[in-house]
Each structure stands twice: as C-alpha cells, then as structure tokens.
Length: 301
Image 1 (spheres, rainbow, N blue to C red):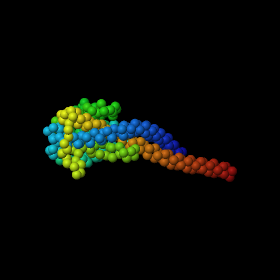
Image 2 (cartoon, rainbow, N blue to C red):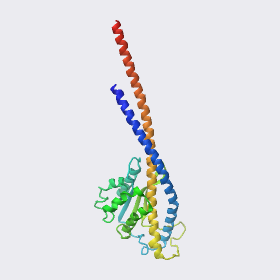
Image 3 (tube, one colour):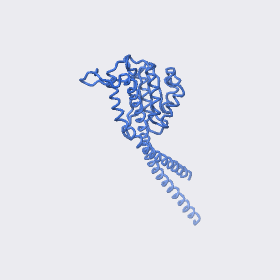
C-alpha cells in the first residue's frame, strides 16, 4: 500500500503542475497576441526610418554626424536584452550565450562593457568583469539609478519610457566612451521561432547599394543641422524600441511554446502514472484475495 500512496502523491503533484503550465500557456498566448500586433505594426515604420537614416548618414561626414565613427572600435558596449522572468525555454539562455560568444570570440582583446536589460541578463553579468561593478564597466552607463530603470522597463514598456534609456546609450557613444554599440536580442518570427541577433546599433552604417555611388547628393530641409539633431536621434530611439518590442513578443512566444510542451509532457506522465497506479492496485487486490482464499482454506482444513 505504501507504493500506492506514493503513486497517488505523484499523480496529484503532476496534475497540479499541469494545471499551472496550462494556465501559463493561455496567459502567454493572450499576451503574445498584443505583443505580436505591436511589433508587426512597428516593424515597417522602423525599417523604413532606418533606411532613411542610413541613406542620410551616407551623405554626412563624421564631423557632421556624432553617431558615425571612422576609427577602429576599441571600446565595445554590448546591450543584452533578456526578460525579467524564466520558464521560457531557451529564450534568456540564448541571449546570454550569444553575448558570451561575442565577448570571447568576436571582440576578444577589446574593452567590453555589458548593459543588461532584463533581470535574467543582469543576474548573469552583474558579477562578471563586464557587468555593473566589473573592471571593464563604464561609470556613466553603470550607475544604480540607470540599472534600476532598465531592469524595470518591461513593467510599462512604451516609447516614452524607452527613449531616455536609448538617449543615455547614445550619449555615451557621442561622448566617445564607446566606439561601437551592439544590441543582442531575440527577433520575433513566430510563436515557435525566435532568432538571436547581434545588431549594430552604433555607429550608424551608411547604406551602400550595389552598382550605386555611396556619395549621394541630398538636399536638406529645413537644414542639415536639424536632420542631425532631430531625425537621426529619433530614428535611433525607434530602432532601440523596436528591438525591445521584438524581445517581448519573442518572450511570450517562447514561454507559450515551452508551457505547451510542458503541459503535453505532464499529460503523458499523468497517463503513465495512472496506468502504474491501476496495475499496482490490481496487484494489491489480487494479493488480498489470494490471502483471504488461503486463510479460508486453512480454516476449512
């Protein structure tokens, strides 16, 4: 009977887990619809704005555009965008792994700092030489107030709340604290597919089309100074906001998929446990019947 009690306990435990994973799947599905609508509406605008930004940047030299840089990058800022919660499959682990791959391979030997947006990435890098208090961290980008702001950004994600964070990162580049800024995040494809990207945020890369001259003659209205001071920063903030929207949609898609698989696994385990329970129960009943028959025969004899 002890074995039956153990199996019953496991059935109850797995059943409770299945209810939780099923509920989390439905919650993530509802959140995914809103997040997917947000990124699909933003993406065409952001892509067109980026195209304009690259074309305009190609007609400016580095003295006119503080967000361009000709020199070889030595100081690199990696912006790792994760989530604040787990239970999303490999969503967070893939971003952290990609960031470490960039540190150890692509930018090995250079001065690297990591800004973590989201609690999971912050936990992974804050005690490393590249995190908030690491030997390679930059003072301006790793103060406590800024860290709290970027960790809690997903509580109320909007362009208004994202813009100051983008401005802070852009100002460190404009002040030449960093020579290159790279965003590491999950790009949303669909609920089951997320692509981990390392996307260059700064410096702005001019657009060069095949068979066309890179030096296009542009007319500026109202002025070139206005374009540099207003349009380029606005476009960069939009690109940063798009990356966060991509990450949020990817998170909900990854969590929905992970919880769907967990629910299916729990159903399979529950079925196997019930079969084991019924077999053990039949064995126990058969044993009791045999004991009763044996006892009756002994009395009759």
